[in-house]
Amino acid sequence: MTPTPPSCRAIEADLVATATGEAAAGAARRVDEHARDCASCREELARYRAIDSLARGLRGDAPAAAELAASRAALQRRLADVRSRVLRYGIVPSPLGNILVARSEHGVTMVEYLGDATTLAASRLRELADVETVEDSAEIARLRDELLDFLAGRRRELGWRLDLRLAGSDFRRAVLEAARGIPYGAVTSYAALARRVGKPGAERAVAQALRWNPLPIVVPCHRIVGSSGKLTGYAGDKLGLKRQLLEVEGVRTTTAARDFRVARERMYVRAGDDRAYCLPTCGDLPSSSLANLTLIASRDVVAALGLEPCSDCRPDLHPLAG
Amino acid sequence: MGLASFDEVVAAHHPEIYRYLRRLTWRASGADDLVQETFLRAYRAWPTLSADANVRAWLFAIATNLARNHFRSEARRRRAYVAAGEGSAGSEPAGPEEEHVLRETRELLDRVVAALPLKQRLAFTLRKVHDLEYDAIAESLECSPDSARAHVFQALKKIRVSLNGHALPMERTR
Image 1 (cartoon, chains in turn brown, orange):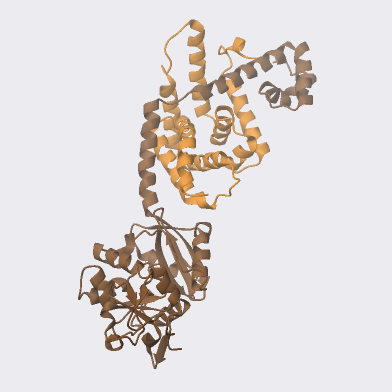
Image 2 (image 1 turned 45 degrees about the vertical axis):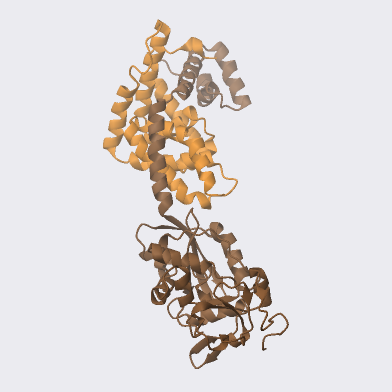
């Protein structure tokens, strides 16, 4: 076997790079100059160029269109399945403690009070079947800002698109949708809500549905109280949070021992779906159950609802008791 | 980046990622599983990807990583090698003599590439078939760009040796 001459060895390392067009200009020039006078390196260069060309020819190979389409269709099916299960969540520190916000591609799916906890370990999300969680603070950032504005009283609406998949049943879904319609700064009762979903007398079932409200704050179940005006339950034992939320909205409450109540004597009143609103002292209202009444914190809210002042008590002329 | 734009990612890159994995596995069914897994992983990680990331290079890196795991099994490597011989045979219609030679040489190339050490095979395929930059290949193979380049050159040298004595389409080169 003939030993490789030193001049061939000197350019050996750059020969492949030159053949494939990847050598630096100086190296390529040296190789080309050497190959001009060296038949074996010239042939070697040509073979590498041929191999490179052959390899690049593979770029033209394409799978059959039907095969590609079948792969794409199978991928879309799997993606659709995963996408329907993935919930992206973030944990938002707030004046009401840490709040988990989770959303699917269809909308916000869950708002959950975590108290001092800072991880998913404390969340109900972990117990849900058919849910895949992905932490995603960036996705939740806009929701976080709006939520904090709301809790600070700088925003009155959370017009989020909701995904009510965790509601549990059609009835509960209907209750959540009806509760969402209760305006900012207004308070109504479980009994009134039961009537609104077409189940008069079903206030216990309504209360139970709201007890499992997967979307507190955004579905404002804090605006719903007992027919006596008592705040009753909220998110388990978090009655203090209910009171805080109501006060952010200008709804005043009274406390006696552990008994929180809406200060109904300091709120306007709307009976049923009347277009008029009254002073709390109007007619029989002071002694009426809240079953068919809505309490309203301020004239702003009254104006937003487009209500007219009652011609008997003239709430537009008389201020509420301080 | 919104989730809606992930649909665009699938539309833009599925054909190429499929082609890549199809060439590595030489079997539609094997490629399908890897393609699905690539895009599912990408979907989950999509929100954490920076806005200026090279999405194509990122997808190739995910696909390559999955392919490497897939080929940890010797049996799978062997199956791909056997399929490479079968898969390319008769893939083009018969033509003039020159085309016949070219086809045979390509088939041989497919088999030689399928027999390369995995990193060389991946680097070669990413560079020569998919024209990725060495930075992107390095990201895929978790090595330096210089190592990525060395893998490609090693692959070319082995191919050169394996094709020794076989007619190459020299007149088609520069």
